[in-house]
Length: 308
Ligand code: FAD
Image 1 (cartoon, helix red, strand yellow):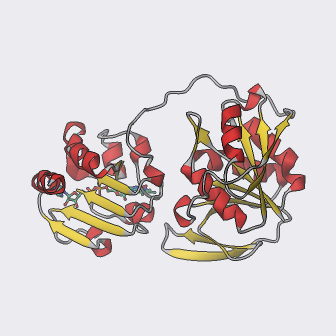
Image 2 (cartoon, rainbow, N blue to C red):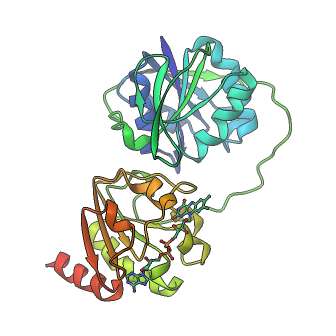
């Protein structure tokens, strides 16, 4: 069996989540990867351990990862593959369902375990139950939760590279521009440590109280939806059912009550630390370590202690 992995990348770098998708796909058989745009990324993809072939979609219509042309391309390649796999990020969630619609198959999102070639485990009900699903579709299209699969090594492979021609697709979308936020911090979904703030941070300005802590820990910054909706931080920081799913080694929650929709995005973290002034806050039910107190007093003390 051969699986095709849609390899997403940004700024010339293959995302760590995409390497997890490769690792997941190796459980299904041989692995080919599809890379759009940048030739240097296709070269880098050829070095990923476990990858047998890189399909490089160099045509300009794929340069911006627009879902419509890309889904048409992937659907045209599907004949050669039993499985098509992508990380469950914005890229995969954009392209894979459209491809599934073109192929008339049911996509299987958010897979956390591959039991066999047709049987997969995925969370349902905001992570409160796990469903084991068996697909009878001829083609299985999966997105995988990257936290559940250790990334494939970026080095060690020596795949061949094949350049693909463009395929016809409906002319229904065009690229206008992109606004990317830049940050020196690690990517939220793949960070080892996440420092998150909630409504208890009080304001955009006071949210920066967490910066020195994130700096000293080399952490990504996350947030609850309440913090995002209040404009303290941008949308891309949201953790939870309708935000990003994270499972770092250490998740620190400040001024976050622990609503079920937030827990859905972080409760699989290895160690959870919560700081909240309400001793009955539900976040303490999932926390390994909890401090009942005012975060504006606790955070500076933590930073001082960590610096020592
Ligand atoms: P609150 O619940 O208001 O909690 C603030 C906490 O801060 C309180 O516990 C308070 O005791 C504490 N606090 C205040 N001041 C301090 C202080 N000085 N020191 C210490 N502690 C302090 N939420 C998400 O986070 N992610 C999602 O993806 C998400 N998706 C949703 C999807 C749907 C369909 C719905 C209906 C809701 C969703 N929500 C999501 C919203 C969720 O239900 C909660 O409203 C939200 O998580 C609450 O955010 P919070 O904990 O920051 O705010």
